[in-house]
Image 1 (spheres, rainbow, N blue to C red):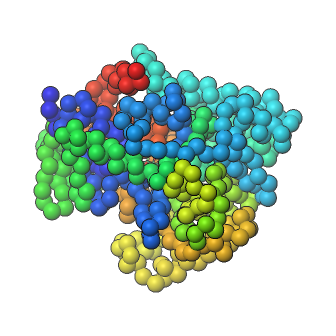
Image 2: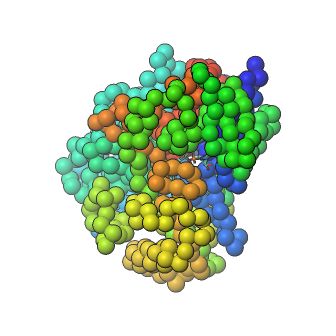
Image 3: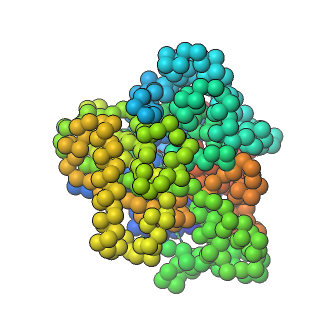
Length: 498
Ligand SMILES: Cc1cc2nc3c(=O)[nH]c(=O)nc-3n(C[C@H](O)[C@H](O)[C@H](O)COP(=O)(O)OP(=O)(O)OC[C@H]3O[C@@H](n4cnc5c(N)ncnc54)[C@H](O)[C@@H]3O)c2cc1C
């Protein structure tokens, strides 16, 4: 076959798609603008301590579970070592001074919360069952061979996650708790579809773990495999245009003038960035306008903390904290009341580690707060920006100290990132964490197809299907399926399990 596929961007979606196509005889070239490969999978190291930037824990990784099967197919298992999070409390939801634990497994999840909400046991059972049903009904997520690869029952797509959680129980506090890990999908009240909440919660409830040594192990492994199959993966190769003739795409133009020609092109970048690369009548104005009109998920401010040696016991849970019972409102925060919430996670550097070397402390931040520095270069944004970051970091650390007393005294040093950092590193609009907001009231307008009006240009990544490890890998199967057939890939996935 030996058709040449050029992939723009080396995020999880681009690399997964590259792997699948290379395995099926395509000649693959991945072009990445950054020096480091992997997009959100990339890690950085300061004074020998490692920090993850965009993938901190993954789920359904026990033998036989969905992501485990996909990782086996992608030859990732030998290269990715895992440490399970606390099975009785993989996520801790802290609301107004009280903590609630999410435990793995349907029964344990119910039991854990029913201890605090005994009158809600049957509501909790119904809630967990619905979550399982939604995930189970997706042929893609269950990796079933289906005649039509319809993703989900339309009812689950048209109902909002907030409406669903509110209907699951009358207990107002429990409603907040059940939605407490919504930063995982930057949920928007009345918009984010139930299926996103359900797929993510089912994914982590089956099993949840950290990647020992950091998530860039996934990127390194996929890159190695693509190269071993004859493909190329290039860093510092920014695509500035995708050239087209009257009917199709012909080449990816790089900053230095080189043009990489190909038979097919796959864009792993935000759809807005993709259309900016295309100066052709083949992409209609109405499509450009639709893409520009879609809201994007909020960005974040992160403090990357380096601890003193052996000072902080390793926390084998993720802590989602809210000052008030207002989990759906924290995305629309008032800057004076910021940070009303945060997510705190320790990095896992070895399977048996007793103490944490580093942690991340993250809170929502909208792009407007840093918009005045747009256009400045990383590392050269000026003193005012540095002061802004320091003030924000100190406020976050004050809040952390209230919830985890003694932490401040154990900090050796910290580093920060803002929405600008994410915008510059990954190219997402305004540093958006997860790309476009799926809106259950405007499904068609907020669904991005892997196909474009250019017959040999496809799209992949978190804006196709969904974000996160599972959402992006399944999206990559859908995109690669445009060339190979999804059924054929599903068969290969099943064969890889034997
Ligand atoms: C803060 C944060 C925390 C997260 N935590 C988790 C988690 O714990 N678990 C989980 O499962 N998911 C998590 N996610 C989500 C997950 O990381 C993403 O959904 C996923 O990695 C996105 O993959 P992608 O393929 O869409 O590409 P991206 O990671 O966005 O990569 C796109 C790549 O394209 C490159 N690029 C852009 N423009 C060009 C160009 N013109 N030319 C060449 N290359 C270009 C970029 O540099 C980048 O490398 C998190 C995300 C964020 C932001």
